[in-house]
Image 1 (cartoon, rainbow, N blue to C red):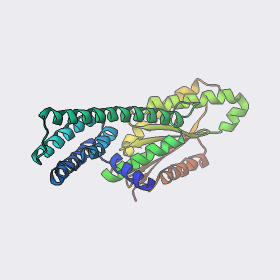
Image 2 (image 1 turned 45 degrees about the horizontal axis):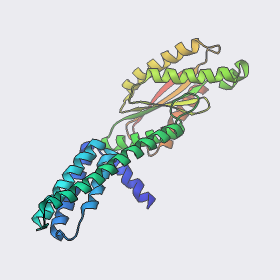
Image 3 (image 1 turned 90 degrees about the vertical axis):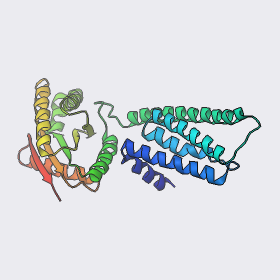
Image 4 (image 1 turned 180 degrees about the horizontal axis):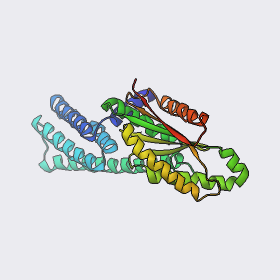
Length: 286
């Protein structure tokens, strides 16, 4: 059951909001037709929670409200056309109102649950020292971007950054200075990239930057800012640390996040083998 739900979730993550709303509207119409064809004695009213939940979770609560009111309108209409009669007409609207209140309550619960889930995910996916995403969050974000890049045939770039001789820095200046350097690096990276980019600490003295929908010319522009900002920040520290950076632009999406990182990691080590304190750009087209 879990793999099915994961595929279901991944499918909707790949869709635009407009596509999701179109799918949801189609489902509502299908349930309306079933309501009409089966007659008023068999109710499908609570099945409308399926499109309502999808709209709320993947688009937003306002869309959930709209789909709720539309569902109720279709449910009332289909049952009326099917010949449903009450001793008093107000009973029809009372029943619809009760369902409407229940559906709105469920939307509010979904919204609160999603907010709490996102908060917990943020805490568990954030590096406690630097405040940037950790490797788990990077994998999550990178996987979503790979799916998007594959669907829309977009380039995707990753930069792998390693602090040169970080162990020696810790030995000479102490771990507190090392922690300050890592925090300064994270701050420099965050100040240099765009809002759509992801900065993460993968562990130890290794950082990564994910640049969605970015070709090599755009990557070079971003990485120039990164290098300049890193140099400025390191000049303020005792160590004046340097960096080896491997950057790979994929025009054909990698099969996995592991492949994405492995190729960038290999380029980073090539920089180290050439004397450290440098950057190398590679394009991956097949």
